[in-house]
Image (tube, rainbow, N blue to C red; front, side):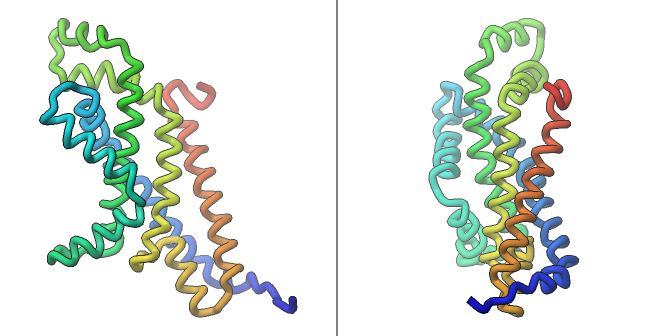
Length: 219
């Protein structure tokens, strides 16, 4: 076809690509931490019988899980901007993916809660623990252990979702590639490079989560 591949331009852009990868990974980590902190009370509320708590929790979960992550990013960036709340691309992507993670993780945790014998919570309460302490020290350590693989998969999914931020000007891994592609017209080279980079990032997350797993790497 007469096309000559020029991967040298990718090597020239490597420092910026690595910087963009760091942005993608930091966003994934931050949104996972916030998502997990939000997901725990959402899961408890969604699994409970108190309609005043259950209804908004279920609404959050359904909205997060049944709308595109891109729409959620646009809502944070353009939607809030339309009513006078402006934020940088990084913040909009962080809030949107945290919202998305919270919904998915809440459903994961709710399934984990259903697998825990309710008598354990009652026994904890009979020993003098408050409901919050019972969930923190007795119930959720077991939930987290039982749902660890699903949480790991969500971590990878959130990292991949950060690529959508390039559509609102985020200079992450995908944003860097799009910028260089427009300057050099080397579409195949840059997007093949970041495809490999995302695979590497996903494998690094899997490797890291394996060694953070409760019980050790071989558990």
